[in-house]
Picture (spheres, rainbow, N blue to C red):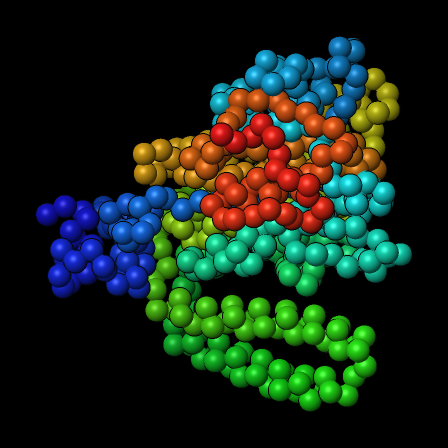
Length: 464
């Protein structure tokens, strides 16, 4: 008997029109041997007739305050984040040197930015990394718009087939405040989506069932659904008494409530499907903001496991927020032995002889974290390749250097089976908005898309 036969449901095994719910159960079947329980990765044998190809995924990783940008060719030019050369004929400088083994899996992008964000404060741009919105008190009242991950996961409904529509992570946790958000993800009404920053909680959410039984969880979801019903009924009565402006505000609020309602219904349905079991050996689930090295790498491990087990197909991870000294992650460089905190390194990058080098070393550390995730995903076999081949990783910052909202340092990695042609350093003029890349990304996910934010088309040179 083959492994495939072992985990097929009882009944007519020759019938290709297998029940979708049974397939979901099969895909999450556990292999048990030598006392270890491991989740099966996505397998073609467990897929339905219409889903023979592995799923496509999107992950965005963000860091604040830009990068080291000394003059290329100057005394400290080797610490310039951007490579030397262009196209396929380029050389990594020290900050990105760790990417050399993955050269054929990455594209470095220069010159791109969000046009509407260029004129706002340098520390205000983190919230707009995946939205492209003009976050201005004078013009928009600090109102954001939907982020790319949520647009693909919810509007395009690409997140409907997994237990979690998306997974939102950060080092700071929660939502933060407008212009200094602790999250990259925003709902269709522009509301920040709270992020998780503790590995133990993320692991429990993805794979654990400690504490409440399934029945207790079901009752909890039922109570939440009842509260939402009462809230919606009350809102309908209130709506009739409000003026047009206030009705609009209430409608925006109710849109968010309805999304919560849909998530509650979704969670109730997924209670019937066992969570995948993974081997937690080697994961530092107790890591916190006093052990940043362990914390970041454990979060990256959890991202890889979430994709491998198909628990979600959309993940955002904010390494640090733009909140300066208030950000928990601001102290990470100091704890890791660097010369200053993250904000201090950024401001010192253009000052003194060692400023560019000090910032460049921190840039290198962050890029090495990206390398770690690329390596993890490349090692996970899937279909005829790896999980990396079916995952688009978008890494970067919304500053070129602190307070400068142009020429974002950006890296696109993975996604070979999604059409990306890597091994390039591509630069673009100021007339090309970053949102053009977001159009290309949507199409690489397999959906029809012509626009996003202020896009003017697709981004040339990235895909075949």
